[in-house]
Each structure stands twice: as C-alpha cells, then as structure tokens.
Length: 512
Image (cartoon, rainbow, N blue to C red; front, side, top):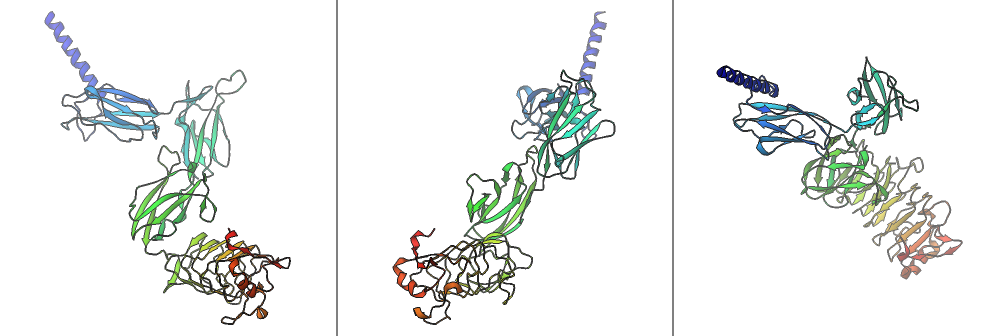
C-alpha cells in the first residue's frame, strides 16, 4: 500500500511538471521543444511599470531580448529571474514578446508583454491611452481604446471638438474609427455611452481622448549646397510639432547644423522664437546626410526626413556664374527671403534678378560692381515689375549702375561704403519708403549729381539729385562724414536731401 501511494504521488508530480512545461513554453515550428519553464507566459504593465518573472532553466539562459524595446525592455535579475520594464520616458503602449533562450541554444520560450496607459475613466467608460495619432485622409480603429466595465460599448453618441480636425464614426456592430481631416491640429473626441446608466444629473457615461492629425514633416529644400565659411544657410521646415524636432548624428567635420528660430529682422532671430528650421555652416568640401525627426509625441517615433548637404568652395547652386559675374538665376529657381551671394561673385550683370519678386534682402558680399537694372524684365520696361527688397548690403561695392534698385518701394534706408566711386542715374528712384541715405566715403561718388561719367562736378552744373534718389515726398535724411561737408555741398545743390529748403546733413556716426 505504501509503495502504491508513493507511485501515485510521483506520477502526480510528473503530471504537474509536464502541465507547467506545456503551459509555459511556446512551441515554434523552427525551435523545437523548450526545456525552459516560465512562472508566467504573459504580463501586463502600465507605462513606466516593472515586473519580475521567475525562470527555470537547467542549462541557464542568455540575455533576454524584447522584440520592441520601445514597448518593454528585459534584463536579467537574480536567480535567473527576468525583469521586464516599460520606459518611464519615451515608452509607448502596445504589445511585444520577450524571447528567453537557453545557453545551449536548444530551448526557447516567450513572454507576451502588454503595456497600457493608466486608464482615464469618466462615469463608466474607460479610455485606454491619451492620444490617437492619425494621418490626413487616413483612418485608424479605436475600438480597443474604449472599454466598458460591464461589456462592449455599442450604442454611442460621438462628438469632436473640431470637425475640421477629425471625424469619429462607427462601422459594423461595434467597431469605432477616427479619420484625419485637418493637419497638425489637436482636439478631443468624446464618446457618450447611450446604453449606460445615467448619473444623478441625467448624463450618460462619457469618455474622450486627444486626436493629433499628423501633417507631413517636410523641408523647403532636401538637397542643399553651401559654400565654405560665410553666413549659414537656413533651411525652413514645415509642420514642426510642439516646436520640437531632433537633429541626428552627422559628419561635423564637413558642416555644423544648428536649430534656427523665427526671424524678427534681417538675420536677427527672436530670442524666444519658435523653431522654424536649421542653420548649416560649411566647414570643408564634402557631402553628408543628416536625419531630422519631428518630435510629434507619437511614442517617440515622429516623422523623419533626410537632408543631403554638399559643401563646396562656394555656393553657386542657384546661380548662373561665369568668370565671377552673376549672369542670372537658374531656370525654375525662385529666391525667397534674404540671401547672401557666394564669395566668388564679384560683379552682377544687368537684369540678373529679373522676376525675383520674393526677395526681401540681398547681401552682395564681395561684389564690387552692379551693372544696373537688376530687376527689370527688359531694357525699356522701368515700371511694370515688383521689387520687394527691404534690405541691401554691399560692403565692397565700387560702382552701382543706372536704375539698379528702381521701384524698391520697401527700402527704407541704404548705406554706401567708403569704396563707392560711381552712382548711376535713377539708381534709387521711385523708392517710395526711402528715408535715410548714408555715405561713408570722404569723397562724394561720381554721378551723385547725375552728371555723365568722367565729367567734373562744378556746383553750377550739378543736376538735381532726384536723378539718383526719389521717394515721392522729397525728404530724405542724408548722413555723411561732416569733415567732408564742403565737398558734398558742392555736389549737392538742390536735392531730396533738403528738408524745408534747408540742407541739413547729419554726421555718419548718427546713422543706425
């Protein structure tokens, strides 16, 4: 009898061990039977949570591996325990598997891991997760986010805070979807369980979650050419979510890349401004790529784009240049905002910027001569074109040809360096906003009185300076080196620089 009882106990223990092994181990057609026994084959965590699973393996195990480390990570604990954790920062809800493999390689088992957000509840509806991400014109099912304590939600009223954002609807018996309509917007979608019990205010149970409709994360230019040294190249980015994006690793020996903020003036960034793109500084010749990630909060996996940056000795990617002369802008290129000309350009031909009416500022850099009529479509047309330049800089200019900046109606001030020797007729005529003109040279440039080139400028023969500058109201403040006032007096007789009939120049030190 004792022997029979002992035999039955041994058989029972063997049955329990066999059952535990079969329950705990997942058999894969390619992996064969496992000799690993798991305390649990499935665990559920909240975001940032952690749990421990005891493992029995006669031969020991290798380091556990999670199939999706953004959902959960796995590490070895004491006594061959597996510690499974959800990231506290940057983690995401979802499901993954943790692979457990014996050191001898003849056994494999899996732990199924589910990570969820803490449930947000409101009178009977549990909403799992806080944000739903959806692309424009795409739909995503949200049925699994809506749970009812006593069953499935099947009768609901659906309301969105903004119908321009997204629409929510039901398909079939109890499947709910959200479709993106707008872009880059956030708002809430409310579900009201009309089959639930009303509260003391006569309200049905409700629940809601945030919907973010992702907009395409794009760059104004993705293939960038830039010269070595000089001003940085700004690249605008579209649809930056939450004023945040990340710059990936790249070869910083070729170029450096910084965040760019919105501008409040020419090359002046707003101190606490929003990010609008990147600034690229060329360092040496070469090509690099860099990945930008839009930090749209989508569990750390935002939209990405790749910039390819080619650094050359000079950036002439948009320009037609021959022997240092800017002849024009390449077909199909529309220059926008403020630009700096490449350092290899020393002369600008007539009509080089014809049709470029989206330019707001030009730094001529090393240019010494501007032939004239920069924006004219042809030689004779002087009025039927738009010039929106409000900022110009030419630190090395010697000669400015006729009608170069004619019709620049947004230009409020202009400063000429001491290198200037020639001013062409009508160079700044019809500049209706022009108020301040500064000359740094101690010798007035030829043409300031609009005389033919090479002719002496005795005072009685000086033409009216309106042939060079005009703004429509006749009042332009002049700034000069007052030590040369007699020379400027001789050149300027009657002029737009006279206010109330009195010639009253200010010293160049007062010009800002």
